[in-house]
Image 1: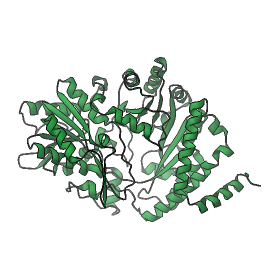
Image 2: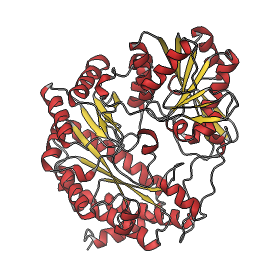
Image 3: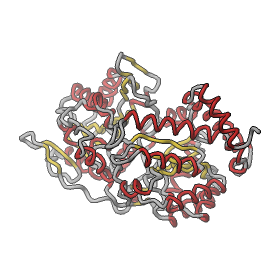
Image 4: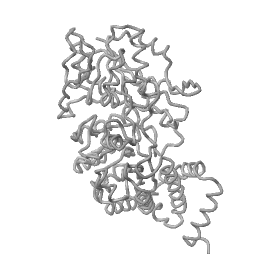
Length: 520
């Protein structure tokens, strides 16, 4: 059996500010690894990364990635029996369906398997496309292995746990979920060799607006799932609410492999919650230090701020951690309870201060526009964000993902019209729900509040090195740290210029200077 794994191109709307990038699809790499381990002939196409410089523009859309002709040529060359297609994001799911159509044009008998976040949650939408034969729900390694074995032996695919499929009458059937893999260490390392690692590393290195310290950089996942119960999170729809880790030893060995094989100098841990176990994270840090792995690392998806303390942060810093992202989400206690994050805001502020004092850059994210947030509640969040003194802060408009609790609340309140999931071209007509009004504020009200707060925040951070130089000095220990500071300043100034009009900047500078007694 020959199996081809495809990550599709990306088509974005003309008003979409998304910048397509190239990062190894670790989900497909894990699938490739389990299939190779079981003796199957596996190949892969990352149509986005391999065609990152191929841009086709129309009036309404921009498509980035390999052309349909090139994808067809690759199919004709490899002649796969089974094609697995990743469909991670609802907004770009139409690209996955376009690839499925190409596969069936090449050979109608080729089995087309969909997997990924979008496919797992909106499997009915996916299976309305006759070019898709079966959908993998959630964790895919052993599910795809069973699909391949049964297809190879010409057995029925109808009753495989962890899948959705059409029956003989054309009805969509959801089979029971597959039990989570209890021991993740039983899985082989991701089959990165199947993918264009040289492209990923080049794109990382050439990125001008990145906040990475070193290149080449790559991604690693050390655990799956999150025990949290936040109303806006789509993670439970993929992994469930359990948290399952790879062992510290396994992760350290993977990092060592990446350093030796690809010359990796920076790791981005993409876990939903890497620090559920402090002990395990400490052991990962200890392993990096013991093996003298000269890397920098960060957690761009965020780390649970309530799990951190001084001893752990010091060890993280020693092992190469240079930047942490904290998903605070709201600075208003009532909103905190509503979103079920239940963060101790005063403790969070202390941890941010501690992290800064230890020389680790801090990045905090906040979500605004929850269904019952008032103007006062949102402004409380803004004030908290400014006073918490994170180095970087981003205010994000609520995007309720399909099948999450907050989406159901918005639908029940009549604030959100349920998406038409029968439309297989949903990606070109539906780009998520970002930018909604709520019970008390219009979408323009929320955006204006956000823009005003972002400008105020930028200016407060603009003068911070002058007002509190110690917060920056503690992060500078060598030439690399200084070079990174220069890079951040350059990127920050570019962002300020693009966000704030010159007249506003001049006025706010004078007000801020007077407030902080820079001018007498």
